[in-house]
Length: 318
Ligand SMILES: NC(=O)c1ccc[n+]([C@@H]2O[C@H](COP(=O)([O-])OP(=O)(O)OC[C@H]3O[C@@H](n4cnc5c(N)ncnc54)[C@H](O)[C@@H]3O)[C@@H](O)[C@H]2O)c1
Image (cartoon, rainbow, N blue to C red):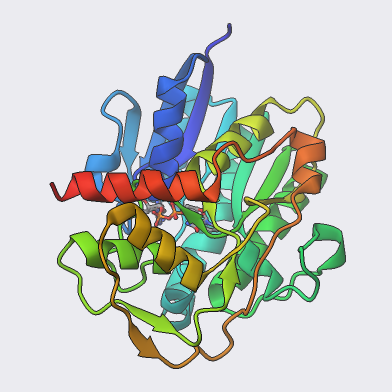
């Protein structure tokens, strides 16, 4: 089997580091190059055996050096400053990374004749879907935050680069990813990781907003990792197509709380807060297009993924 050289941006982050681990543990031989500036990532999450560069994806000089030296065939673009609320507080700073950084990376990838760039997009691009389950073709993007606008703009640039520079790209729109390696100790943590952190770690005062009947399509990280590998292997060009990557089932926050209590054997006491203004009530993806074009289907169920995540959190603090 030919050893592929791949560049992984954001390799110190939650999904990027899970992806690198899967590449290292899998049967396929990879030469992994990583880049991260540690703005949200963790030093201990970087695999020691990869060729790692500390710096920003918005730094063209650094990218030129990396592409020239390693000539990656595929680029997996996970790097971003994520989280909606942070982008509302810092719209310019987050645009620098999420848009300008993405375009800088696309420019280097096109110049160095990368076979395909796989872009991590977000379901936030939909801005709350009108129809459930959300199908790509029936729900025009309607971003409602700087983060959502940036992720969607990244998709548009991926498409433009496919059309005018001949760089094949695909945008994977992830829905609520969770799993081991997602820390819940930042003020911008996702609800699931923040709740788990409060059960085991120092973070206290977990809360729930509204009646808890809002639901999300929670997707275990291994399913997202698998979708990225399938996107790399697909024979046909994507030319910037955007695909939903999710579990395809939803759970309410009340159900999540109940399962966490069941798996941890601990009581999760949540402070009640009012509903968040503009919060999406339900999210549920239609993943048929990803199944058709990638052969994607989630291997790990929400319950199994949650059990593994609880076990990881428990072991972190034991
Ligand atoms: N986690 C989710 O639920 C979710 C959902 C939809 C989309 N996504 C997307 O998936 C990707 C990965 O998300 P994550 O949850 O792993 O986030 P994360 O914050 O854990 O990882 C992002 C990584 O990118 C790095 N980074 C940030 N700016 C950089 C820069 N300028 N140069 C180099 N590295 C930089 C960070 O240090 C971090 O290691 C992001 O693009 C995000 O928008 C995530």
